Amino acid sequence: MEDIEERLKKYREEKEMLRLMKANGTFAIDLINDFVNEKLQGDIDQLPYYDFSASFNRYDSRSTPDDKYFGVNLNSPNDTPIVKAILSLVFKDAWDELNYDALDYLKYRTCKVNPFVSLFGIRLTENNYKAVSKFGLSPVL
Image (tube, rainbow, N blue to C red):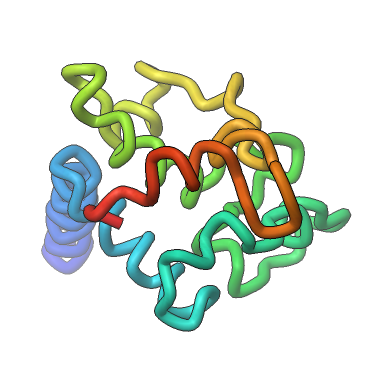
């Protein structure tokens, strides 16, 4: 019986540690850093040009390595780990309690975000987006 109690205690501690990392931004920063290194070959400036639609437009629920960034919710590409991580860092100073944890628990929602257009602004030319050219990418990313 003690083994089960120890495992339950460890599980609760790990869950609380993850919640704290999501609340203080560590989880989002780590996830974005991993994404940049794995998917963008270490170049954050390639973020606006990454083909998100290929990862979002999966038609089955089999697990893939991309689940770390895009989750398994095939019906809502806005409510994915990478979108929540980006939003939680980009808008953290705009709303007092906005963080990854708040997005997880639906205090804030991502459902109205269109990650293919709005996140980087209107596509002006092949590799030129209005928001990126005007504001640049956040140094935190």
